[in-house]
Image (cartoon, rainbow, N blue to C red; front, top):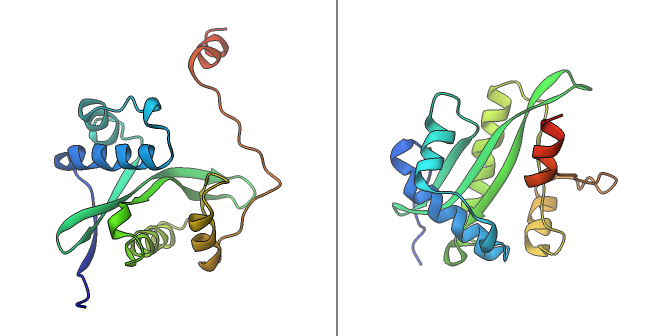
Length: 162
């Protein structure tokens, strides 16, 4: 079996259709497709417009995009350093186990070090044992004592309008 060529590149506005494909693939895997409101237009505006909200890395095997990582800056008051929050990491099912997820995380870690970040953080669904095992092998530590909260929809609007 021949080794496949891996490349990881930063996405551009020309990549919004493939980014949307990746988002839909991730949502399907997480059984959350019904929550996807993203469109190419929204992605173009929010990722590549005047105020980009996040950055995207695309992972290729033999020239085919098979994965992505979407991330944005955060900040640690305790470290007094910026950090990176990894919102999404996804590799197409047929491309898993070939090192592409690792390649995407390596590039993200390289960017974090280059930018002087104190840490990279992300969330994982508690049922996703394959990913949890993968992350632990890399030396990532689960933050079991923390609970993630979210304000969205009507609750966000209500709080923000007072």
